[in-house]
Image 1 (cartoon, each protein chain N blue to C red):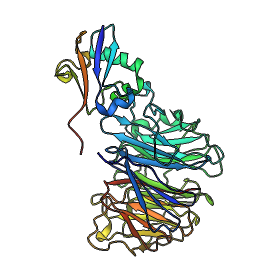
Image 2: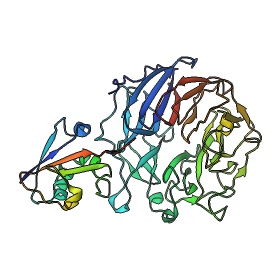
Image 3: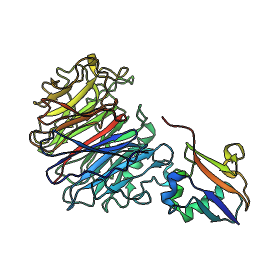
Image 4: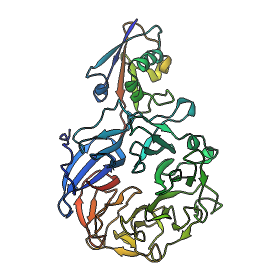
Length: 374
Length: 93
């Protein structure tokens, strides 16, 4: 068995890179220079970890993880000591009501709520649903308006399952929220979750006879920036889009990318015009184009995209970066991080201009989350 | 009557480290024994069954040495001398 992990040794100002894989979670820690990393793990050895988060709304950082065992199902775990210990599986049950006819398969997203409401948290799960906690994650319930949505019978799973992978609370208006799932697309609420409407105008569905249905798109990730609260960026299953009206309409911004197919997308922490993606060849060959591992960055909100290659292999790299395996930290210049299905983790400490390998040989990476410890 | 549930190592954090759990049951099927478990140790039950009260797909249950898959599933009869054994299946990657 692996050695017992001891948790991250991070202090205020250090960066913690939380990496979820198909066989456990790993924590990498660096000081603010982000040049040398210490590793810790695996946490939950043998279990897939698709969702990780650090919540810093309290007096000390709290880590959250949702490990899933092929045998024993999914649990939600909390650590108040940066991973040295985790809460028991007996606590924090995430369950569908029996009368729903649904059973939890996977937690895809852990999202702390508004900064001024530290007891609010959200989960995005499979089969697709939004769960909410109002007591700091101690108890959970599905959001009824989404659970009982009239479209539910028409939503269908993609390759990864019928997964809610994106939760974007509106940065200014408490009752507004966006979720995205595959397949179904983008839905928003303006009444605190009581009702949800599809918001996919302009987003195509290449895999359907009707390329522009009201819903049913396979959206892979949506990101936003608090400085531009009504602006959103979207990486689709074929398609790269921006909305300037909180998802009412979407414009194609695939300008200068080698492919508009991909999964991952991450927002720059301080520049609302800067977004990162990792294009993939196609839906039938989900590797980076030309076997060159390139992160693409726009600095003009999608008017143009530039490849970032320094330090990344530019030959023979048949790599795949999945939807939650790309993230940025809150530093300046920004740290940018991603993990691959081949078990490599790369980091940039200069807005993506240059990259270095943090670790290789991990199990397939499905989740990368970065945080600067406050 | 009393039925013994044999708990595999990966679930013993939910039994205080015990490898067996004794269940007092009025009825005589595996499913009814698990209902007693649900009342007594719900967190352990949740690792074995889904929200729909279906046995998780990669778990095997034996009554003594017999796989209940071939003996009536959760309707498999048990008696006071039975051991109900839970084991992870041969699966995974």
